[in-house]
Length: 146
Image (cartoon, rainbow, N blue to C red):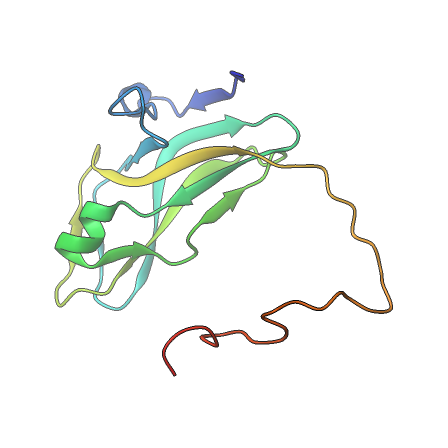
């Protein structure tokens, strides 16, 4: 099933429209609308010039690019970042530099990926007890290395 998601571009950013590099890609590439530097061990908000109107019961997830992570130690601070259906502001990407030197971002650079995901309607129900499971209360590494 195909859905339609409306986007608007900031004036002068028409060349930065999110796009998939390949038809079978899961995500749309987001690009920077400005030149800036991400300092070592710091987060920087990178503007994209993109405004989005998602249908109700959909979200956009902003995720890191694997190449930036592998080659430059760049990730996203709140990954995945969630864009709610009611948000109409500019899409921003919070980049974090784990690398040993400043990271230069240039206008038009692909800085993140955006996945559009459908959300089920969920009702939370208060319960006195929860059912047992094999995992139980184990968390935070309980199934991995100790």
